Image 1 (cartoon, rainbow, N blue to C red):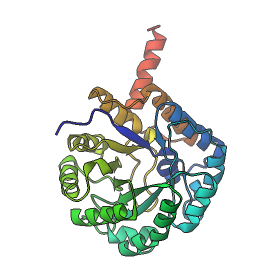
Image 2: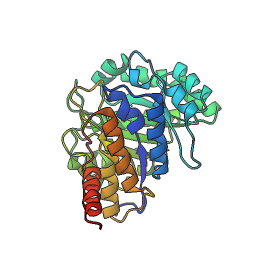
Image 3: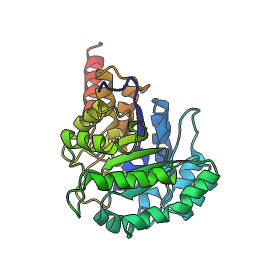
Image 4: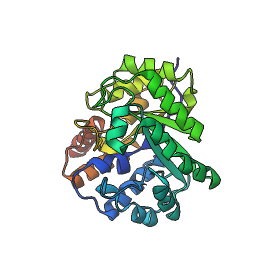
Length: 308
């Protein structure tokens, strides 16, 4: 299958990325990060999560972030919501798109949200109904698609069942997440082939973590399977607070560099994202995990030094 001509990137650094960083991040920095990413051409920038501040302290100020944000026309700013309380809080701040999440593995569901997979779907029914009633778009995440830190291997049928349940609730798109980053290209291709017999590829997005260095390879394998939406995180920020040892998301800079090399249109200014990745990494006092971002900035510095 030929890869798509255009690809959409859903930038998750300001939510999925920051929620796993130990450094304190102010509301002003979060807003600046989101506005810089949107200005660089990212048309979907996950902005916050209306979750328990005790469980995920980095997302505690999401209301203030949404209220202080200058929104760009044509850019969506989704928020993660786990339940009706989170949904109501999100709607009060003008959120127009939400994300909901479930796990493909039983062990991760129990450890992450303290309920079974079946219960997690039931818990989202009132959120889904409220979203439909209020014309709020809903995107679904399925985590642990390639492996689980508690259960080990995850059956493709389990991934497909949870994805189908989210589609039935009204999710317009399902993001399939390799939460611990164990997936490899062949496994990911087989998984997409399996799931696409039940859900059309155009409704699927992929969300890779780079724990084993397979993120970009898995993006390429997914492109070859006709997937055209990918989640990624500026500077490779993040991980998962409930998945021990999981490193950050695949870096937006690395994915965009790959796509540009394939001649695939993204509408994203790669240097602007690279500069933003450098800026947020410095602010957090962490290493920048975007290899393409670091290389581009180093090359530009070299050019500037030689008057190139």
